[in-house]
Amino acid sequence: MDYVVIFHEETAENLLDELRPHYYAKGTDYTGAEVPGTARFLAAGGKMLFVGDEKTRSSSGYLEQLDRR
Image 1: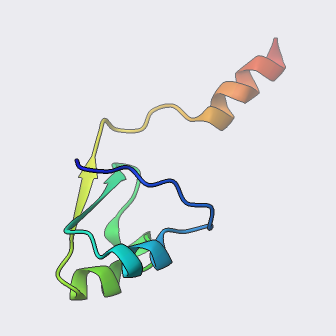
Image 2: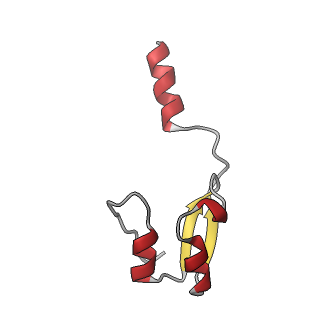
Image 3: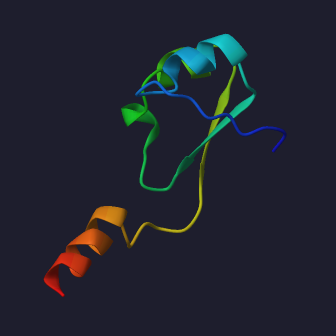
């Protein structure tokens, strides 16, 4: 990994169009079809990677546990 980019839009679609990275990494809780801009990114020659452990916890689940205490 060369860079991490923080963006303030709801999706990274415009950023992908502008930067045209070789790879785009997403967590294992995603599939290529549901990521905005996937078709355009892949058509431009990019490669999508799904990385990390299976998602068994979520921040919203953690907050719900705190509310129960």
